[in-house]
Every structure is written in C-alpha cells, then in structure tokens.
Amino acid sequence: MTFADELERWLESDDGKTLGAMERLFAEKTFATTIFFLMFVPALPLPTGGVTVLFETMAMVVAAQMVLGRRTLWLPERWKDRELGELTTARAIPFMARWVRRFERFSRPRAAPLFDRRWTLRILGLLLMALAIASALAPPFSGLDTVPAVGAVIVALSIILEDVVVLAVGVVVGLIGIGIILAIGAAFLDLVGRLL
Image (cartoon, rainbow, N blue to C red; front, side, top):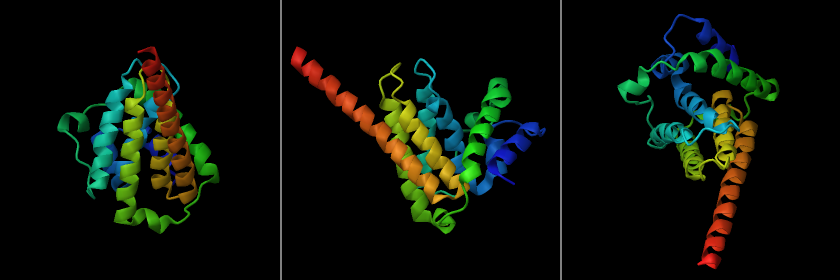
C-alpha cells in the first residue's frame, strides 16, 4: 500500500484526525510524516498573513527530535490531541494525497537502507530544521518562505518513500530557497546601508 493510499484510508476511517492518531498510524515514519504535514501549508503559494510561522516552529521542534535521535515523537498533549479540523481533513489532506501520488509514480526505494540509519536521520533532521528556520525567517507577505518549505516537504517525502533521488530533489529545491532568501536579504541590507 502506498503512502497516499494510507492517507486516504485514514481519512475514511473512524479514527480521530489528530497528530497523536497519525503517530500511531505511521509509526517509524511519524517524524517525516509530521514534518510533511506541517510544512505543506507554508509550501503553498498562498497569502497566509504570517500564520505559517506556527507550523514552521512546530516543524523545528519535530526536526530537533530527529537530530537528538529520538525513536518516538514527543509533542505537548494539547498538540497531540487537537483535531486537525474539517478544512484540513476534507480538503488539505486529499490535496496532499494527490500531490504525493505524482511523486509515487516515478519514485521507488533507492538506497532504502540509508533511511534506516540513525546518523542519516540525524543529518536529515538538521537539514529539515534549517529549511524550517529559513522559511520562518523569510520576510512576511513576501512569499519567499514557499521555496524552502517545498524543499522540506520533498525531503520529508523522500524519507517516507525511502528514495535518495527524491531526497536530492528536495535538497536542491531547499538550497535554492535558502539562497534566494539570503540574496534578497543581502540586497535589502545593502539598500538600507546606502540610504543611511
């Protein structure tokens, strides 16, 4: 069964639609799945009025646990037990499942054992944390948070699919996003310096 199938089956089940329920469902892939969900919203090219910083902060907390080598996800109880909401379950998750299916068409396990190694997951946790931080630090209302967030979504998906090619795509997209933010930030500081 594919990841997209699992998502759709979960939506159709009577289980509560919470992060805690998702953790029980996806077990060893919980960290990647949670980051995938959290960074998907900032990855959408939509005006969010800065609300995405909350998702990016939660993603940083989850990625930090990957870096520390935790085997189980720790979240505050209020985050774990909070329902994802009708909008998320009725629209966002089905949209995510369709998006995931596109990757699943060409993806297959490539270098899969790499994704079972603790040191690999720690390095990927650092990368995901860096992408979440870059996304959060992007100027609000600029849309610049989208590219590093897309990179984070693809990296998380590579862990779920155990595909090093998808990982490479995510790393490239994420680094481009960070580069754009740094270049525009440097240009802005240069402009301010000239004006002062």
